[in-house]
Image (cartoon, rainbow, N blue to C red; front, side, top):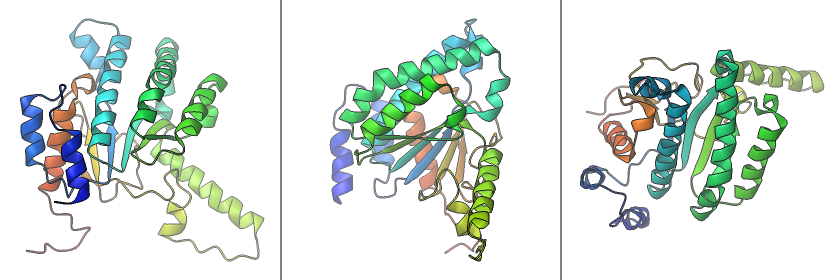
Length: 266
């Protein structure tokens, strides 16, 4: 038994929040083959609220509990990176009242969960055009980043004002600017050069992409990075997503053979 496996088992040894179903699923996991990077498209808050004849904001509030449980579970599993898609560049098209509430909920989450991030050695970061967010939001984000910058556990990325195409545009602009600033330097344009200019520069691509609510699309998320990610879709709406759903996604991932365009080893 490896040290990591022993630590994970210790983290999950009898825990009041873990149901019998959670424990059974955990026992089936290969703790030596946990994905290094999981990305999640959190979808279904609005439908969750609509099904209960509640305002959409109720769904967004309920979704925060799912974020809390998934982040905590990822940290307990010794996952290296968790990236959540929280707000896209297209989401500005939503009603102004809803956008305002989403930003308010983001600030509330950061204020309430910062201590938890510190207690669990979690490092917080963002992906996207966060410089276009309001100054008050930027201050909260910077505070969380700076406060957790020396943590060495889970890297918790939140994609805010993010779009996969926008990310590629920004990467190409960066490459062009680099060329303009050093006209004598021959620009070696290859995949690594582009990857080095993405928001995720220096990070491994997601091993597993999870999509909630049953929608079969990737919604402009990490277009470059998920080229060979395994994809797992669940009909579960995000506010109902819990650790058992995360365990099921990882079990599905562990049952697959990743060939990266090659042939099966069998």
